[in-house]
Length: 212
Image (cartoon, rainbow, N blue to C red):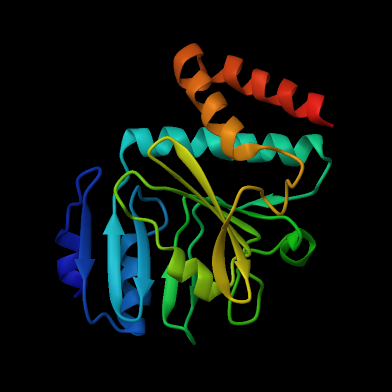
């Protein structure tokens, strides 16, 4: 298994799926792949998916993550951004690397921590998935108990809220309830892509301030 993984080359936008991967093999593969890599993984009940994102995927991820940070900064809410940290729960045989994630309500719980174990620690309060290649795995986030999941796909933002253990699509974020983000984020994301990152980010920050 390890020899096969070392030899795998996953082109941008492509996915490799391995079946019947034990938890021990999953842990070994993560160590073998290392932390400084461009690929993302998802593990669910023995099935391991390895994906390398496209340029478009990474650009959208960075811009939307910046929007989230601006919202939290302007609202003066402490947060801990953990990017594509690997989250896993051995008891559930599940693991995922979000495109971006944030501890917000539970920021104080993880502040200063270098390791997290979802069998005892809370999951991130908000996770972001950019769905360019049909990679997103809401069922894994649902099982891990992530309260809010944003999925950006085909130019639209979808917000999923965890209610009674199941995701329900919502028009509003539970964290940013007073902001019409479904309409606004795609608009400013497009502005960033057309006019440049700085102009788009400044315009978004200005819009947020006007809502306060």
